[in-house]
Image (cartoon, rainbow, N blue to C red; front, top):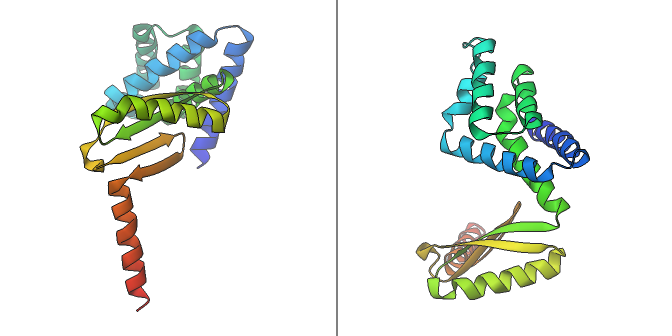
Length: 185
């Protein structure tokens, strides 16, 4: 919990700095690159956190990473600040929070949609973008994937909210009701 709050504060500071200097696009790109790098190479963060490795070697590695990703100076400096303050473990959370701040500032939202039937994917995407856009008063973009295990229907995830309108989800809810009803007998 505390790390999440700290990550949000660092993200907000970085966002404000980029906003002031007119470099929001660069910050968004940097955050996406960091997020992708950490997802592709999860051991990268562990190596930067490892206090058995001399701090000067970890700093040099962080600088090399920033150079390889072509990060802006302010992003590199934020990464080094996290490293020297022994908070590099929240780098991924900071990147995600930065992306959320940029999207919010641009009045955008990204949703993840899983559908059971590929033939309905485009229509489901269009309808969900329309409905969520009206509800949230944001421009919503959906990333759609097909998941045959849903049997039918769809599952939408936007931020922390998850809406399950799948057949598999309904079957799971029926099972839970049946089990909870049986306990009262």
